[in-house]
Image 1 (cartoon, helix red, strand yellow):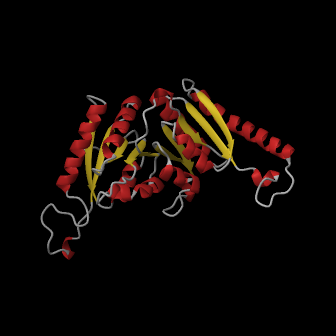
Image 2 (image 1 turned 90 degrees about the vertical axis):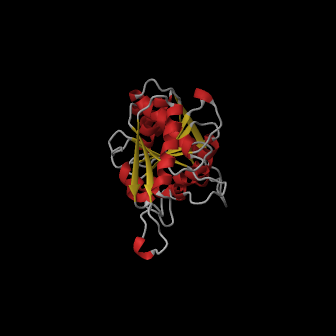
Image 3 (image 1 turned 180 degrees about the vertical axis):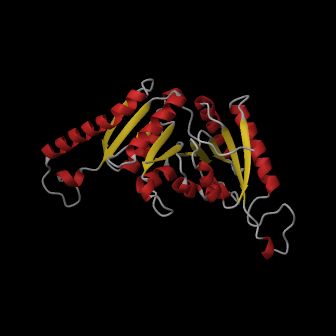
Length: 294
């Protein structure tokens, strides 16, 4: 059995069709960052006193201990296929899925979970709680989904703004890019239409104001990115500046990305609010999404 640790890469295993892909990604990342790989399965605690039909080893409304053991064995095989010889720890906890994964995230390097399936399979416990893990975890969370093969040319795309979560998102993006030997595209997307007279019921366009705003945005972005890029000199960096809706643009960029990274303010994260941009990207991106918090 594994134990929670400050360098662990923890993978939530639920036996769904996305598990093997999430495990393979996590195994490659763990190997490249010299991090222990922990495969975590959760058995929901049975309410024995309320059940007259429960049998030993069964779990009401969830998966049995034996089933979770089978899922973990299959997941370990996927990890070994991805990275032959990798050390893998298996861990089974009992309780609520989100609570147990969030608990294991304390001090971990990264939590990896599979995105939801669309084949109608029943009892996809982990996938029903993806957003709960994302919003509650104490470390970055990667929501894995299949992306078309694109090789090393596909960048890690990170969306940044003026929020205090931007430095954390940048650090996470450059760290992942360095591990994957991928370039980083720093995307800063803003909506200036209303400010310059192009919004709904717009007045005259203030082109000087638009130019001044874009110049200032570029200056602020350079100041934000430069110190992080200096710590990761092996990572090639490009900047994407664009007008429009941030979530829509990041989802668009995800079609040619290896990973999209978004930041969120831990102080404002709750079960109800992740941040509209981050939540939109997690749900609609076409590649894995890494959520980093300030």
